[in-house]
Image: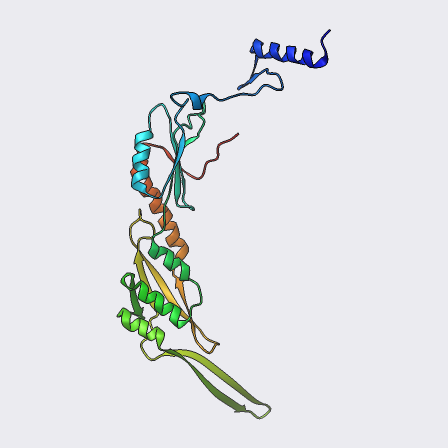
Length: 273
């Protein structure tokens, strides 16, 4: 007579030796005893079962070279462009609908913003003191052109005007007397003035990303009063439209670099389980 444990061992060995599989619509299952452990022997082989990996880079040139080296007619690669994230991913073994691949061999490009563009984004739309704005203008002077209305200003003069701003307060009283009514009002006006010609706009020209062409960004200067010292704010004129232009340029540059090797789709891709 066999006890329960011995009987379970005999059944497990029988199932393992039988090597039984069940075929369903698109799936294959193996019949194995509960305690059987599968071991992957790939790590002990001379070669891997297949090439797979994940390249991540900020360099468009290196990304294009890698895609060219790894693209084959058998791999059936596909590329996906995330314009919001300024990134692109190529899957080299995605396969096709009829012959789907594992999709675990990829290359991802994420454009890195330039130092100038990062600095610009850090101050756009923020209320800055005179010192903070003047220091920004001094640090990035080679990238800037100042203007006052229709006239251009030398950058040193524009920076000096920002530094020499002051608050002026004036008070006026109006009195109006009529036959049936009398009205008096008092108005206090606070304005910021500069001892120099105050710039109204700045043009900031720089590459937003290394792979893109230089762009000229118009910054409108506004002054916030109501404090002992004025605050200044730079507003990016047409910001959303210009950002969309950067995304469109990225798609064109990417298509020129790898579009002939890999079909590109706008969007992101997630492998199903």
